[in-house]
Length: 380
Image (cartoon, rainbow, N blue to C red):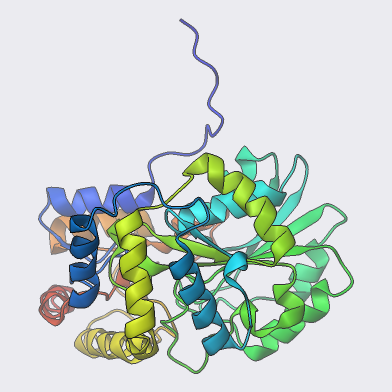
């Protein structure tokens, strides 16, 4: 039996799976994979059970349950002054599915897709599987800010798409209004499309999140992806959505309907309820996570790690160069096995990592978990 060659020969098991398994094997405190160790709002959880009991257990419409799409459109209009309609919203089985569907919808053989390292690990495989070419631009540490002159130089006639991730995983940086203006000037008069990975849209600490929704000229060429899992502490539900102008939505749905077709019905109905009844949950999320960031940073302030508090997401990047000369993956393995705290190495998000000694901790944890982890980190 001769099996076909791998379509992704250079791809192994994701680092999130590797580190979470290692944390489990060594009973370490898992600050690696980005999920909370606390539940979402009780009203949301109870509503799911209620809808299951009421028999709302069959397929939802392919594009998402209308009442949920209407509530998403209302939220986008309220927060970003972008008056989208429910017809521009597609509910997906997680943000990763939405990212893949958007890329599959527009990337063809030979098309180039600009992305920024450190880059979330699902971007490049999706591009390659659709015949595209990933053009990876390294964001320089420690600030990890985009050099727009470098972006301009990377644009060619084959450039189809630019992927933007803000607030940024893993570094926690956020795009500014100046960044958005430079982006606007860069793509004006071109046919370049944009894919906004905005799953941490409600976890920005230093002012308003600069969504592509805020800029009509940018939105008209954009897929904007978000995640209910990040917003409602329910990452295991794997429910996200994509908002895009009608021509892009039409192409997006052609991909979506053959990837997952539809998403869990009772959960969609429950999410529609909480969006309608408790809009303040999303509004209060920045302060909720800023308190956790500040607690974690204060707890490790006397450690030998060096850091600047994260500007967004629920991740904190730290520099361990005063502690070890080990490469970051080896350091994370040592940290998990010997110290009992699991982290994520930043270099794995880069194609050609620069010289750096950085790891990422997740602070979306209960205060007691953060305190126990910090005690171990400060004892190094």
